[in-house]
Length: 118
Image (cartoon, rainbow, N blue to C red):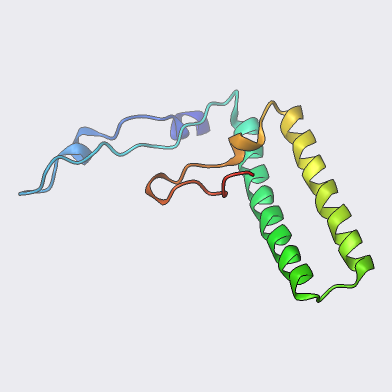
């Protein structure tokens, strides 16, 4: 039932009729998922959120370093922790056949979720 509920299908014809006096509407789309890939898709979503948080923490850490809020020991510990998290993320992506670029969700007109990698 879940696979049927999440299959990517064009919208029903009643959803495609444009409102009176308006131009044609683009077809609404539904979420695509397959029972064979649902675990991988869920892992991709979770890893995307973890990567977003990792990047936010990294930016905050760099800001704190620039402000001089951290001791040398704290900077070293924070840098090592962020590098370890990045390595673990890369390992998990490789284990499930994903790349870091696969985690960057396209949000349509808003652009991508994650900033471009340097």
